Length: 394
Image (cartoon, rainbow, N blue to C red):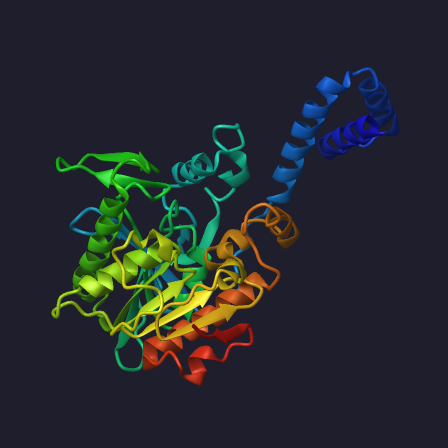
């Protein structure tokens, strides 16, 4: 019976790409009857899996629909880290060129594939469709200020093995609410890949390397890059777009959270840091260099947790909101990389997509973050009032 099912799955995979004639399919099924199970099983699985995966990502990912123009620009900090900006764009756009989802195309997706083992198994195609995907953002579009002539700025740190692109849809949604999101691509070896510029001006690709530095050195490098962004970006944005930054906050996902916390705690009196916005903080990766979980800190802080982190009783800052039906991957774009049914099935193995609508999660997180940037009050009903939010206590 198992042999029949495996051969049937092989037939199904072939039927996607083969002529739809009865004679062809009958001959094909008859021919598989003579294939030994030891050969049929792996061949059938590999064939049907590859075909199924390739079919599943056709026309994926689909850019979430929003009514506001969002621009995207990439720049480099003096210290070397790349930064991708997402911001409200002016309607006076002279060019309609769309920014790519992945800044470095296949190099970015190959780095992501290598990190999770896909490249080593010859399965890089599972993420390859992201290399040429659109971001929904206008490349280097002029920035549009709010009524006051300024915009709030959120400097954001990616997670362990992340990069500045893998939350592009989420950051686009956040920017559509009226903020600038500056996604930092760290150079400490924890980015899935990044492009390093040497002192002589040459550039080289750096893949994820957990041994590039010690754990504490990595966290220190990340915090230093965030502090540099706080100091440099307001002036850079003023020079590039003639727009002032009003409120300036730090944020992050997973390992990006202890990076942001450490930066906020180490900021000088001259460095502007008005608050922290944390998504699933991996507090255990603070390596003893952070205030203890539950400690009162001076910087206004709001934390959002997934179902998994809420079960682990992760809490930090003034207010912690459990986002019901949200998994760890919902704080980036993982849930939107393929059809929902595919990502939900994958979530049986890794926490890629929770049961809640991924676009609704991003909308409510973006609305809440924008309100927090405005009022800096983590207990405000405008901040905590989302239908997916559950306020939790220490």
